Amino acid sequence: MPIIRGCNFPDDLLYDVPHHAWYKPLGDGTVRAGMTPVAIALAREVLVFTPRRVGTDFEKNRSFATVESAKWVGAVRAGFDGVIVALNERLIARPMIVNADCYGEGWMMIVRPAASDWQDGLVTGAAIGPAYEAWMDSEGFAGCAA
View 1 (cartoon, one colour):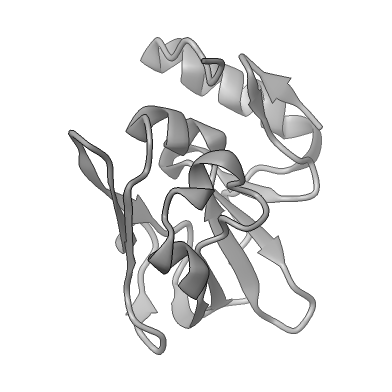
View 2 (cartoon, helix red, strand yellow):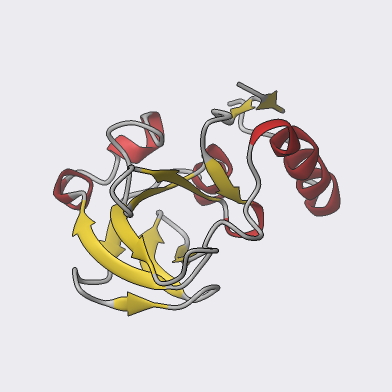
């Protein structure tokens, strides 16, 4: 698992680096989605999680959820087109769990991609470290360490 500037990135996931989202294929044509530690660090501390409704279609690069912190409100943008099929109701009720466990209990939703090439443009495996290092350098991001 690559750890870049204190941010961990399991190498079995796919990442939308510009939007700081991760995706995990579930084997039935659906994909679990969540926020990366970088997204959490940028928000400082997620206090509110508001996803779009189950059954809602979403488009690549468009918002499919909103997160709020004490001084910031921002969109979680999708890495591909699809439809929302399930939500993490526990995260909606207790959004702070994502701050401590963004890859486990803090997952956001399960989606069904609209096309078979949904993974195009996402980063995985050995490419994760260099992709996030480049983003961190370009944005002056110090890291996830507290």
